[in-house]
Image (cartoon, rainbow, N blue to C red; front, side, top):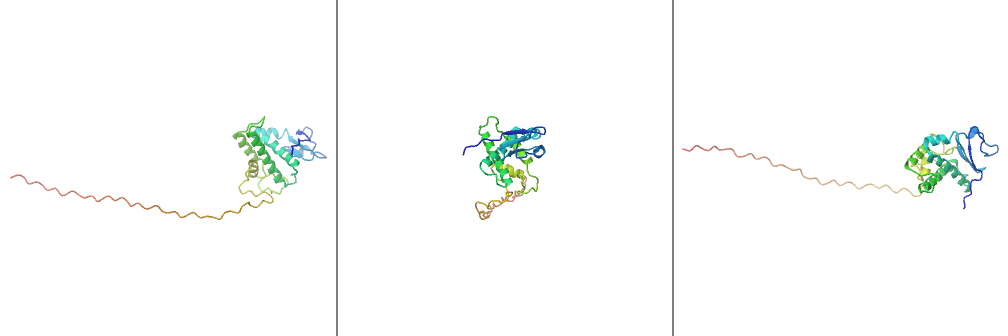
Length: 212
């Protein structure tokens, strides 16, 4: 299916600007301060251009900022695919996965504005570990985005070890194989110790008798 462009536009806002026209009535600045979001009702993407973007750029760099927008575009894709009814944490981690797909496209050389480096990825991981749910946040929380490991796993396409934050985790695809026991080790043959033969003293010296 052909992609449908964002219809409601892109809105940069701040404490002293017009707020994005998302909903009726639209939100106040205090409700959306230091945030970036996709608004499904009006099909727009908005971001705090004064109290979010400069700080993210300074702390994590330009590529991490690009990931924020790729994440929000991910939500727009979900709206076009009728996938917005999933639990919040599923929708958020899927948007992180879409951001990872965008990163792979950048790495493949398909971006006019970005070139991915290992340093960019390091700072992106740092951002995910910073912009994560607090310890003890339930996966069912309507504001849940995932732990740092959840988010990194979704971004990279590799679930975090021990991942169990999905409200209804799927069963394993295959049963665990039976445990196997290694064969006992066979001791190496012992080499007999090297014996030095006992020292044989020389025969006693017999003096020669003097000549007559």
